[in-house]
Length: 300
Image 1 (cartoon, rainbow, N blue to C red):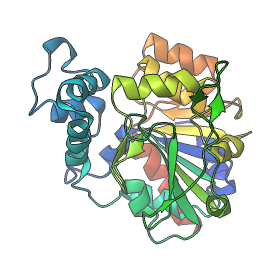
Image 2: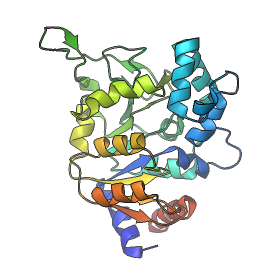
Image 3: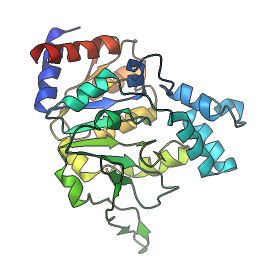
């Protein structure tokens, strides 16, 4: 592990210049006592355990969720997702470490558990913004929440197409949220506080139709990321969906980022990292986060 890279990341985190981007693999830091699904493969097995799904899509999360939505109703998908993530566990020491960073402006959490907000529970000056499904909240891309889980009302600017029909608009952040020191951005939703999930094919089609022009991404998040570096943890870039979300969320940021990836990247992953200036740190996640936390404790 390159000591100079570690030093650069630590300095950046302390100065608020590095944005952590957490994927499902971060749940591995919690320990064996946590039963939350820590990968799309485990999650889809939970969703299909009680529902018959065609074999060819049984192991594909978004396709399986779409099948259940089509033939069982959207409420069935939401209930199954809530069931999968309802048995929360205590946040890991690393979640707590991130919540302790005094100058952290933005934390991106791209999975459905609620451990980051649990870690932030004793901190002030923060709030959540979560992606929401068009199937349940048509015309609205995100919802804003206070630390206590209560939703903050906000206006949506609805644009018109060439025929004068209303189309999805950019969400205007509420004034209250503009005072947050730290933004917890959960682009695909979270089980808490309101069970918002982007998980089916149609959920992602709606978002990806607009994400190139950044409409689904909150304007304050777009502003915060400018010039900053992203640190990808517990993430893979193995499919187009993962790459598309990462690319659009870090758009117009700096040209230097990092990913902790102990396994050899696929050809598509390597090309993506090369194209967007993402430096691979070939270390087990637990080792890397242990160094970050140990350095912080030693400094304290």
